[in-house]
Every structure is written in C-alpha cells, then in structure tokens.
View (spheres, rainbow, N blue to C red):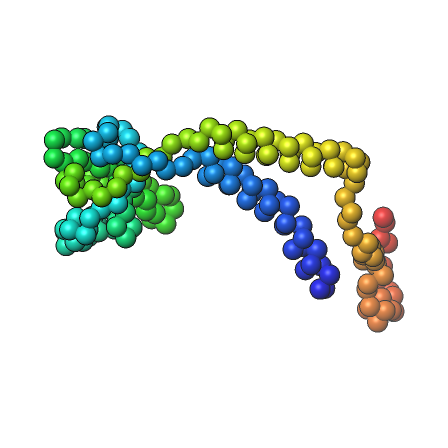
Length: 188
C-alpha cells in the first residue's frame, strides 16, 4: 500500500515539472520598464504606484474602486489622457453564478500628480529566445530518452487477479450442488 502511494507521487513529478517550465516560459518573457508619466499613450498597459493622497481618496470612495488597489499599486490600461488627468481602465474578474468567470472594466480617474511611478509591460526578446531554446532542448532530450528506452514503461509487478470462480466460498458452492440447482459453468 505504501509503495503504491510513492509510485503515484513520482508519476506526477514529470507532468508538474513540465507545467512549471511552461509557466516560467510564458511569464518569464515579460519585464516591466519604467516610463515617465508624460510618455503615456492610450491603450498602454501599465502598473502605477500612487501617492498616499490618491490611495486615501480612492479608499474613501465607492467600494468597487477600493478593490482595484493592491497596496499603493494599480494595474490597467490607459483609456484617455488630458493635460492634468488620466483615465485608467482596470479589469476585475468575478464568478457569475459560480459557473463562469466574467471580467468587468472599471474606470479610475487619476490626477497626473497622484502617480508616483509608472511601469509598462514589455516583451523581453532575449529572455524569450533563450527560454524557447531551453524548452525546445528539454523537449528534444525527453523525446530522445523515450525513444532510446523503446517506449517501455517500468510498470509494476503486481500479481494478476484470480478468476471469479475461485473466489466463490466453498460452502455456497456445496450448498447449491446439494439442492440440485444447476449452475452454469464459467467460460473464459
């Protein structure tokens, strides 16, 4: 019984490792770059660090806006820019009837003076290239390993299950024959 649990634990190591590598490859290819507030453009995905005054103003406002904050940070897409304000579209996700995930966009109006730091998410081409090469090498090495082993699995050496007729209690089998009931013979 204990050996079975250990085998199940080791069987999940390879798929979990593959999943971890793929998640690293997807997440690891982006980085955040600091951008001046004056260089913001509409449709730019940003992460902003707000001043304490802005955070207090948002927290004393409606509940829906309070949930948009992550400490002093807020992430979203720049919708509209004017000389002293900017409108940030912040997506939030929620479960609708505990069945499907819905995304709702909240508009958050901020003064440019409230924004302490702005970071934009950019694709890191060097990291993307090296991560893709590493994932490709790992896939090729694991394929070569499986092919060299002939695709055989190690399996287990469990004893085969006895046929059903051998598991019938002898008292039941004798009782049935004494009462002259004919039982059909099991054919395999």
